[in-house]
Each structure stands twice: as C-alpha cells, then as structure tokens.
Amino acid sequence: MQVESILVEISNNNNPTSDYIELELKKRNIRPLRWAIVDVSDTIYTVSVANLKE
Image (cartoon, rainbow, N blue to C red):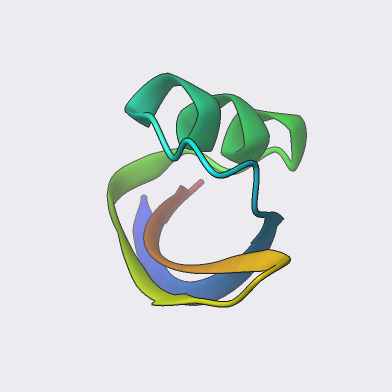
C-alpha cells in the first residue's frame, strides 16, 4: 500500500461535518488515512487528503 497526498475540492454546504466530507471523499473513490480542510471559499472546501492506494 502507498500513501498519496492530494488536494480535493468539495462543494461548500456551510456545514462541514466529518460525515459530509468523508462521504464526498468516498464518492471519489478516495480512502483517506487522514484529511484536513485547508481552505474555504464561498462555494468550495479545499481538503488535503492522505489517500491510501493499493
């Protein structure tokens, strides 16, 4: 397994719960080891993700 660091843009729903972010990552076939919101705009959350790749 490898860990890949990526930035992902997710729609801003004005309620950034862990469940919401993790669901959006799962929709993109991303298996996060860890993630953090690193930037917020009116429409987008930018999330830094350590993605587990096989």
